[in-house]
Amino acid sequence: MATFYVLPPRLQIGRLFGEYLESVFPGARWLPSTWRDLAEALGAAAQCHPEVYVVYREDFPELGDTQRALREDFGAAPGDEVVEVLVSDGLDTRRSRIAA
Image (cartoon, rainbow, N blue to C red; front, top):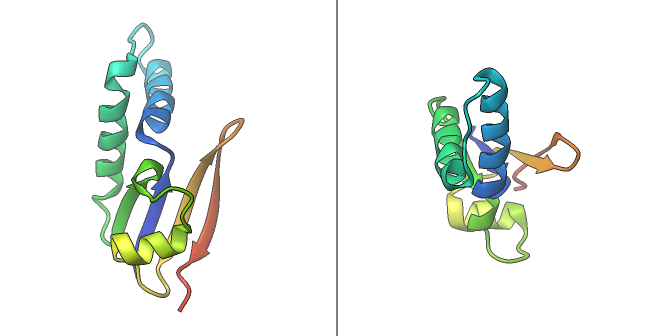
């Protein structure tokens, strides 16, 4: 079965990834112009695992149902796992399975 990671919008997750990288590489800066690329690189790294798919929140239809959009637009099937990454005070996740 596949796992679909639903990440925040690219600019938001890219900013957070850039902040993390700045803590690993003191003195280096990742500017807003790089955030989209950072998000794409992070998603590509996750997809090196078999049956892992990364979808960014801005790629979903407006106010649409996540599971429905994953089935109709991204090829998810019943039983696939969905991991939604949420940003509030930090990162949180919500896990579910695609319903039959």
